Length: 283
Image: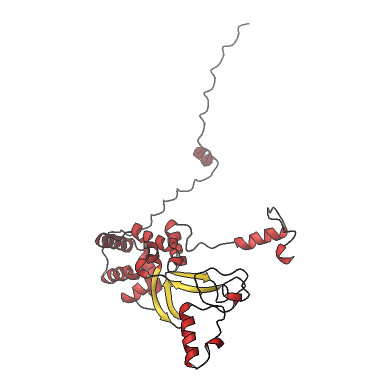
């Protein structure tokens, strides 16, 4: 029996794309989203209005935006808001930066030089301006720890004794002569207990080091004598910290590090600090 000829194989159906499959299933594809329009950015080269230019001029005086806006003619009620809006404008920022650069070139005052001056205040030793020196008291080195005079005081007291018509034999020599306030206290002095007496010594400002000159802010005659004024070291340190970016103005501490440390020590959890078994001060 003769075999039947093999028939032709049907052609393979081409694979449908995802969009074609959705169309066959009756799913209508959504229209593609239009790309968002880019925000309009103000060009930095836009010319300033007269009041804006005045604001820039005033702002360069003290870098106080609110006060600069007021001095430039903006309303005091909205000066803070106006200043914030003005400082956000690119053309204002560019004008301020340009003016600061030009001023630095004219005066030779650069950021490096300003930071260097602030750093002098931070590292200056206040003891170059004012010192507290401790010396012996009047009884430390007197005979029998009695009151001790200088040579000049002894002569003056003897003369006064004589003018009163009193006998030289009745004059009280007390602890004798030789008092020197620069001498160290006597460790067994019954009067001061070996602590001596403190005195304030002011430096001659004509001979200050460059660091002390930066720290020195003047002097005035006060109720209790001459008062030496100094620039604030903490303010200077804050300026350095800001320059180095060690913290931001809006950076708020979420935890109190000291409180956390004390709590850890008190609880004994994962702490290398151990309580003192015996306090020698209390023995």
